[in-house]
Amino acid sequence: MEQINVPTEVVVKDGTVLLKEDSIKLFKDQIEEITKYSQQLTGEEWRKSVSGIKVKLSKYQREELVNIKDKIVHLLSPAKKPREILLQRANFGFSKHALKRVLSRIEGLTDAEIAQIDGEKYYFAVHPETLEKIVQALIDSKEVEEYAEWKAYPYLNFNYICTFDSKEIKITVNFQQGIFIITLIVIKNTGFSMRDFFPNKYKK
Image 1 (cartoon, rainbow, N blue to C red):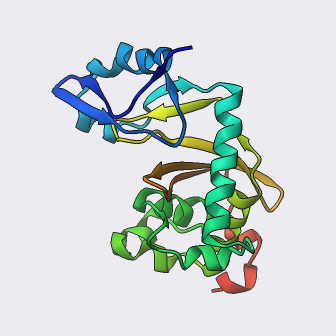
Image 2: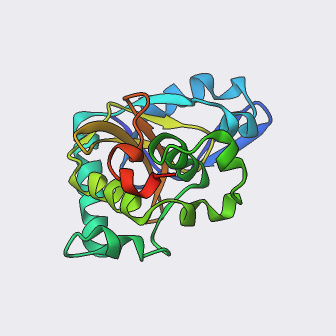
C-alpha cells in the first residue's frame, strides 16, 4: 500500500487543516477515508464534535503503536513508575476534557461539583491515586483498538484498551511531536466510581 508523507492538507468546509501525524506511517487509503467526509464540517465543528472520522488501522500499525507507547514510557521512567511519569509534565499530560471525564466517571463528582472547579485546576482536583492508576493501566496496555479517529487536529487519536481495577477502560492518546497526551478516558461500566475503591476518602 502507498504511504503518504506528512504534513498533508485535509480539506474541510471552511478551508484546509494540516495532518501532521508522524507516530506511524499512514497509507493513501486511510487519508482518502478522512477526505471522503472531511468537507462536511468546518475545522472548528470537527474539533467540537462528539465523534470524528474513523480510520481503520492495520495490525502492524496497532502493534507499532503499542511499541511507541512502551518506548515513550521507558524514556519518561525506565522503571515504569506512574508517579515518575506524572512528574514529566513537559512530555506527558492530560487534556482538560480527559480530566473532566475522570472527575465525573471515576472520581464520581456531580456536574454541579465539577462546575465549581476552575478548569485549569482539574488536574489538582483528581486524587493522586487515581492518576497513578490510570497511568499504570496505560503502561500495562498491550492492545490498541482497530480504529483511530480524526477530528481536524494535527494528530490522530488512538484508543488503548486498558484494565483499571479489573474493569476495562479505553484511554485515548495522541502523540504530539513525542509528547504523550491523554485526551479522553471511557469507562465501559456505568456507575463506576473511585468511591468503590477508596471509600474512606469520600465519607461525608
